[in-house]
Image (cartoon, rainbow over all chains, first blue to last red):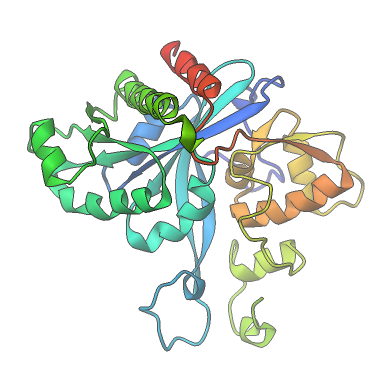
Length: 207
Length: 123
């Protein structure tokens, strides 16, 4: 962060401003466990240096029961990284990275509402982190694809094996992705869009 | 709403609940059903008024070009929920306008998806 405390207002650098003509904003969410590469992916596709937004986590209201007996509401803030891609003079895409662990699901309320869809980012060294995330997305009716982030020392499995191991629903695309590479990350987002497009055109009654 | 007596015992922290309470004049953060989404684009309509609360003036000042609610949160180091409260005031007073985000109920528009794909392919 290069903000200076002495300056009362920090804002976007001139080169980070959107065209005045932009009228429509859409969002997608990258979700995955800790250290799986969400921030890396956001950073590689974003035209601006990724920004961090924070939200207040009021544990007493978040359905967390492990603070039972604590009288006072326990408020902390949780950070979330996001980036931006200007797609045309009128259209901008925001890409949010959000942690998949259950204790952060309270963040999902404002995040997934109205989102086009999600990319579940997976590290094959920690597959077990992904089960809950996909189940939760299905419950919420959020369409998603699965992207396997290619860590150099991670075991590789054929997609069919992973699909079975993770019980990924039929039809949900499973792709390999190198979150560090802009083109690879971009292709992940494109895969999501094509999948959404197919869902929309084949299930018009869900509109 | 937090209990003032309890709050007295707690340190005033930058970004802590007490400071945020003051910034929003103690109003409850609206539920998520507010019309403002994290990607709703905000644009100023005029200059900040004299004597305007600093956080409100800051929003008006940096929204000369469209900025999403999430970007405002990031640049001003305030939670999205607090930004939402402040924007409710600014929208009511006409200092800013909101450009509705293309929120989807279940599945998005085909035309919208095609525009997104087209844009991504051209990256």
